[in-house]
Length: 455
Image (tube, rainbow, N blue to C red; front, side, top):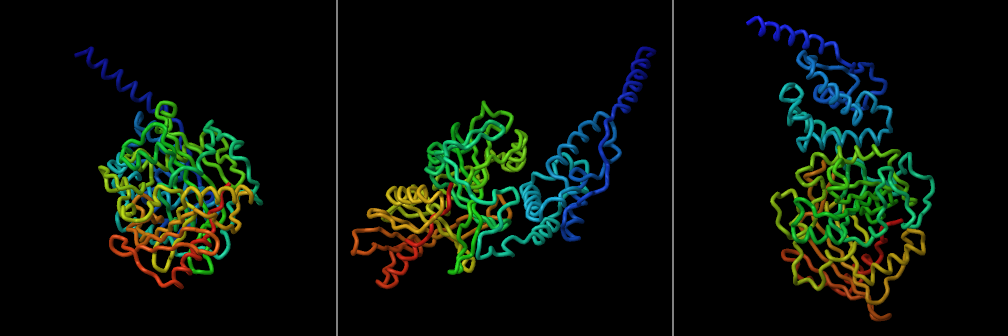
């Protein structure tokens, strides 16, 4: 008994001494608090500020070492990723972008952390609170202007195209892949949170995996390129891609990149393709943002494919429902451009066969990446596929293709013969006869769509 008592006393003494080993958690005023409505800020303060602010908010049991050490580490990590006490110093678009990211983390169940709300139930975000944040952010409430959106503050004042083979490495030593423009379309995204469009392309390994449904996980060597443009409202009332913003790459390499979820990440901005990161730690932004979709191997995109998958939110079967009876299968071609019809809430992508794409790339190479008008050579075939839109289940503020509504084809022929035009629409995309004048107008419209700007 005497020995047991001594052990208990020693344990208590050691526990007491441990309580003195507590590095601080800074607690300071908010120098530039996030700009938001009173209701949105109230929700953020209630549910997020314990970790994501300069305010030191610990329950009594959080103060007990060794739990305190873990809590401190979590708080400092959370502040480094997102701090609502300092976010107000960022430009308004940057603040809005971080709020959208926060809402997506909440919507996908990634934040607040389950282990945190288990001990701090008051920090749970209620459905009503989540809806209030979404209403406040209100994507698509501000339509894009008739000229390109202002360039980000860190973008170069004037485009300075660079040879794709000479693009600099990211600070994490991830190289740029100059072949990305030849990869196949996996999907497109209409981003109402920041008025941008995105093409998501995949290399041959990724494209084959999507076609077969072998994407849980994605195979080694799969590569994705996410290319972004500002949106512009045209005189036709449609929203078209405008100025090129950036290209992001994801490369599956499980062994080489164990510390970054098995993927290499990189981002290159502007026509000069300037590396995004200032040091190798920039990759924490990538892995943190993609953490909520770890169940989909950290990939947000739902590839357009007829392959079946375990989860309905892994592939986009609806958008791939193009019948085999069509004269061509455009989903295996390359994409030329896209647009959105905001009135009818549809999205359309223009695809081209090899002859058309070679002509587009040659024209862009001659024009320094710009999209000067040009004439498709004989043998070109263009396919304009129009889909209904649906909300992206992985990103609040984004819309993706849903059920196909029509497929139109234009084939260029010998001079004087005029373009061949065929239209397919309705259930099963049956062929729709069109008067000659309508066919000519639609063919002219399709042939006049400017290709997206690429470096």
